[in-house]
Amino acid sequence: MTETVQRAPLELSPVRLPRGRGLSGRLVAGLLRNPSGLLGLSLVVVVVVVALAAPLLAPADPLQQRIVSRLRPPGYAIESMTYWLGTDQVGRDVLSRLLFGARISLALSFSVVVLGGTIGVGLGILAGLIGGALDALLMRLVDALVSVPFLIVAVTVIAVFGPGLQQLIILLTAFVWGQFARVVRGDVLAAREKEYIEAAIALGASQLRVALRHLLPNVLSPVIVLATFSVAQLIVAEGALSFLGLGVPPPTPTWGGMLSDGRGYLDRAWWLSVFPGLAITLTVVGVNFLGDSLRDIFDPRQRL
Image 1: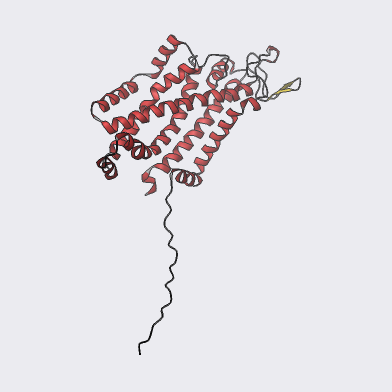
Image 2: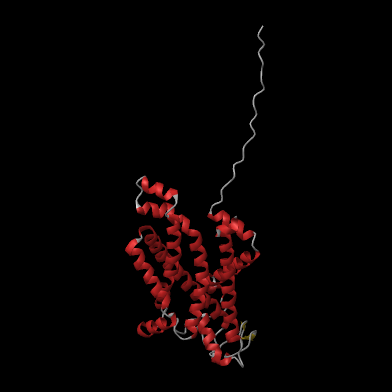
């Protein structure tokens, strides 16, 4: 007699597969583990929010002059109006000018990074993917831009076309795109030899599809890091040009222009230069902290 052996059904425990982290997941996780990165992000967010809300936060018109209240120290009050950071040489509220000056610095730096980054990333991918004469021509152009002293070109351009925000954006963009192009070209040259790129080309993928679907995602990490550091450099560059009288013309408030206005009153009105200098310092430090954190997050050697 044959006995039928009944076996209990096999119970399969759920298998947990490792979850991949995308760009945003790595960014959030890395910032949460990095105190300096969180500090830098907090400073940047505060400056951006203050700049966007400047019309609501400013206690007075940044262009309104009141000669009877000129060079008043911080905390000076008159007729229900308190000048928390004092007044300048023509009686304008320093706090209001500081808030509106943040808009100029951030608008300039972000605009230049977006324009220069877009141009540089596109040309870098094109040069690395196609190579040949186009690659040699673009890299020689980048080398020429790096070798030219920026200040001499800035003085020449401003002298010919006059000072202004649009002129500054175009001038700085012409010097920034080369940094992005050089970094992206190097990454594209390394990624072009990968098997998946060769497989995509063998399957008949066009160069445009290879650039957008395969190469562009691989260069986003270094581009983000470079863009962050470029913002800090551009804020300093705008401040330096405005300090020299080559930036946005007065009476538009800029941090560099406020520094320039206050240098003749350091002995009796220290607040005219201290507060805009402190604003530039804190913003640049915050951006650099954030950039260092992003570099640690996206650097493959930090994840080994």
